[in-house]
View 1 (cartoon, one colour):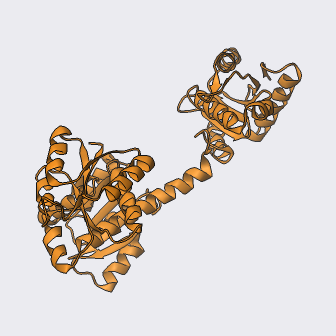
View 2 (cartoon, rainbow, N blue to C red):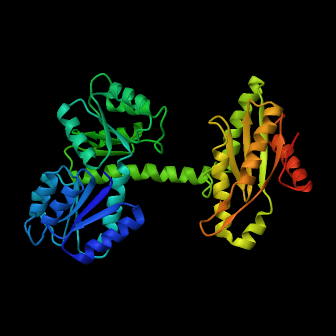
View 3 (cartoon, rainbow, N blue to C red):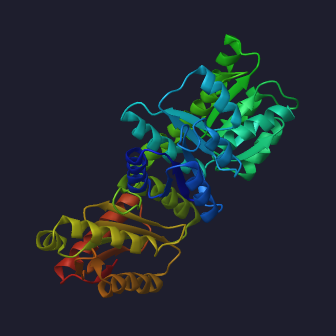
Length: 415
């Protein structure tokens, strides 16, 4: 289910939504100007719609009939309309729509696109709902699944920890306080032994939502708290805001540790992870080698073909190098056109053959853009044996790289 259905009689409004969603999200959008065409679109795209955006007042469905028609096909739906009041809200939300949007100004388009983006991303996010009441678990599951999350449930904190152990990539936990065997506070305490607030968000919920309860939830490590009973809209936005906070932390962490162009670890991440590998190799007296690689005459590529081609070359070389290392080793971009490999458990003979394969792999490939392909070579300096420090190994590899450049480039030198 990867398509978006937009049912809207305003050709301008539907075309703008289609343009923005397809451009920004890469999601195929199917439009329909009335309920009859919507039914046809659903029949022709059976099971393909992950979400529908529905105008509440259509020429052949002036009183919101399209909502029931689309929901009957089990397609999660968002309603947008030019007018909305408490009476309409009380009629529409109980039907099971995800949300409603006021179509009153140009900012509505931005809101729609942001909502579609959020719901589309949620399909890859795992959420755990913990509550000892079967009725409450069912209700939480229903609300979370409406938001497109992958939902897991547990009856108490002990079961919740087991589910988290089986699915360590869960990003959000919604937990009650009063539960047998292990309550919500103890669950949070145990979760926070492994997961930080930036790595997994926790929302506490309780029907006894005193200030003391909410304060304790936050003190024990929850990110947020909601009193029961709560409005569906409040729950929807609290949950999604907490997920967005986790994603923001992940983006910041990635920016700090990963090279934006190649997707490889950056210099900071290389030394952080490399230090751990170096320490382990030193204790175990195992083999560890460092290679520094530099693209030959890279400035000439930028000057001749432009920086777009140069960036494409670096990105593709990064992808190539990343594919050459095992999960236990590291390929990183140190900066500019300089890369580094940290390789374990190779003899000097194996290392020489390995580095030659890397060199010839670059030499025989073509890089660049669709419009401009170029051939490049690299020079490689290698420190074969483990030294006193990782920095010393880097210095030796850098010296060998300098000598490789001096001797004519496109070669591997080891020490």
